[in-house]
Amino acid sequence: MAGESLHDVYRTMLWVQVALGAVAGSWALAAHQWERVRGRALWIVTFVTYLVVTANVVMASVLLARYDWEFPELHMLYEFSGIAAIGIVYSYANQMKARRYLIYGGGGLFLMGLALRSLFMS
Image (cartoon, rainbow, N blue to C red; front, side):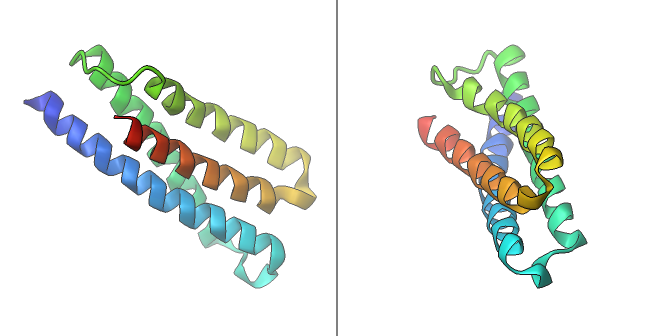
């Protein structure tokens, strides 16, 4: 029963990841074009998105290790790709300051896509 409850929370959090990834990604792309939409709130939403991605990876790992939950073949690859994407976005954003918002925008939309792929695979 606990595994099923955790799985329900996990699937709900994947939808949260979709929403936050879409908002953070679109907002960052808009911030590249228009300075007036830049600000602290964008970085807070981006950070919360990254926390949700990390929480989803932890929940999927617990479901797999503790509850022997069966995921489709590439499901965990998509989950761990999210963590790798966060690291890549962060490292490139510091190297390419002129395109920082484009990188974060693409990264947010990529994380949204990973969550959608995870949702529709299972």
